[in-house]
Length: 145
Image (cartoon, rainbow, N blue to C red; front, side, top):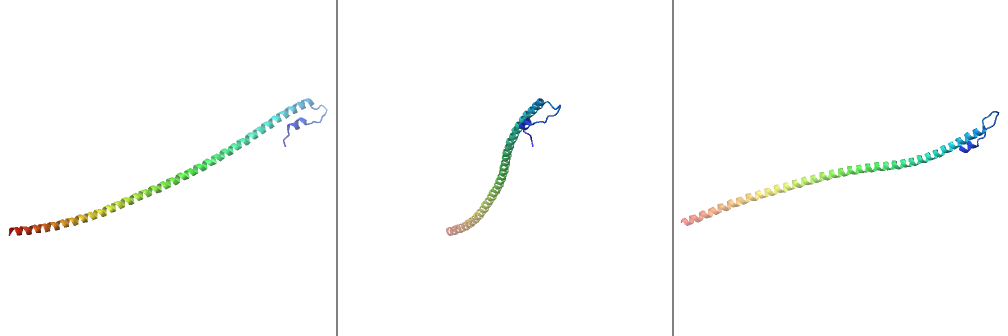
């Protein structure tokens, strides 16, 4: 247990023959009490300062924790955004490739239809030409007779 300055100042010593100078002892105890008073006040000030600093430290630790959580949350959001963007990119590419394949398939179908129609028209032309030549031949024979 610590002694308080008042304990130091009020301390009584027994007197003996050829003992200490009472005034000197009292003066020394008074100085000692004053020094203790200053030390106690300084200690209280330092304890208050420590509590303030501990409070600030706790505040900054909370901010640090919040910043770490925010950073982690942001990183997770960015990872999710990248993943979503990658999936969307793949989906767009697949859709474009499917559309391109469908366009090519339809173009090939149309080409085949056109080629069939061209062949049909060539045959019709050749048939018409043959008939026309035949008719002309018939008219020529008739005219020659």
